[in-house]
Length: 238
Ligand SMILES: Cc1cc2nc3c(=O)[nH]c(=O)nc-3n(C[C@H](O)[C@H](O)[C@H](O)COP(=O)(O)O)c2cc1C
Image (cartoon, rainbow, N blue to C red; front, side, top):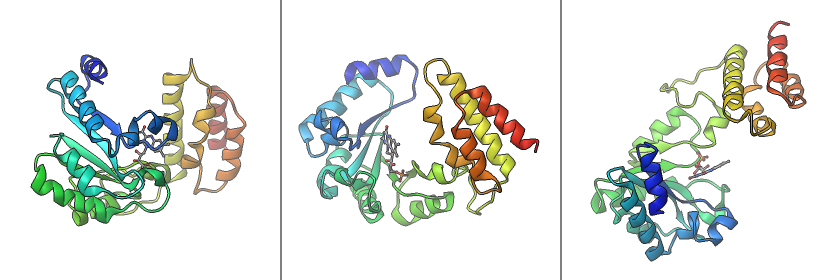
């Protein structure tokens, strides 16, 4: 962990976030991700090693409320004692994976615990945030300093726009952002990966307009970047 932190620092990043929340069994079995939850000595040694390697860079942790039951006071309390720059809390326990609802009441409790125990640690709440308005509401209601959004982006690619007024988007806007994503994918992975991975994102962009289903189906059948772009262009010219 120390060596990894040193590498991250040398690469010029601004901070390091330690993943203490991943619930994938193969990861947890190795005492990594959410496998650290409740293993206080191990977790403390990870954080300490990363801090040593990180030098002046801020170190944060992202975690969950517990392993199979909520242990906010013990686990979050322990992390608050580690003098972290920030602590992101996903409001589920590890065994829940992504199921059920995120427990924002408990995230709020963690934020109050922070107020007395580690006033300098920022608390970032995470789980089920669906819109910017929802994020603002959670910020006000639960006393967190920030919100982290994961899957919300799949439902609304514009979720980070700082507007609490819902906006509908035109087909052209969806197509522009799809082409941008495809182009970035091609530039980043074009030589090493195929476009299979990209296909799961089509539903994000190709929807809510007439002919969306047909276009999405046709895109699914294309394998190359150029063919996908050609199809989108042809569709726009019809
Ligand atoms: C496909 C996928 C991959 C994820 N990968 C990571 C990861 O690498 N590190 C991490 O801390 N969380 C990861 N998460 C968890 C999310 O960061 C987030 O904690 C979780 O999805 C709950 O927030 P949400 O309801 O806003 O999505 C992942 C989630 C999904 C759906």
